[in-house]
Image (cartoon, rainbow, N blue to C red):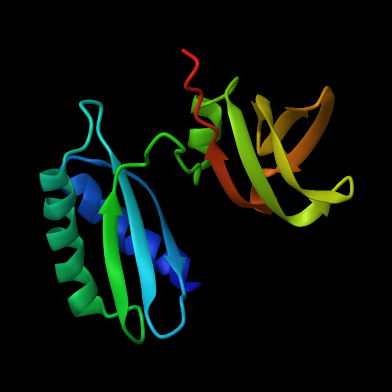
Length: 152
């Protein structure tokens, strides 16, 4: 099992046990010190105290399970305005929104997209970019985020 999958399986129940939605996580190896970034959400919003509570909960599990070799920083935060999209359910929830998406493998000769998430059918995401539709398989998504709209 890949480390990210193992971390997801370990952390998601811990976050949900304290009453928050586990949005997802990122693990970024940055030289000698890596970062494990966990995103949480709640219908009433997220406070600094919420992040601290989840951090303590997750830290205790990570200390026991020790899934990451070497030193790393643990960060817990809300998804923010440029919310990352990790799960298929996230894409379904944010249909009609503008997103940025990077694919693992090229789709019609490109890997980077910025456009409207027009539809989600099964595991196929349809993006409308500059008047042209692109279909990206969910399994081909490397990274995706909501593009904040501050005009409203």
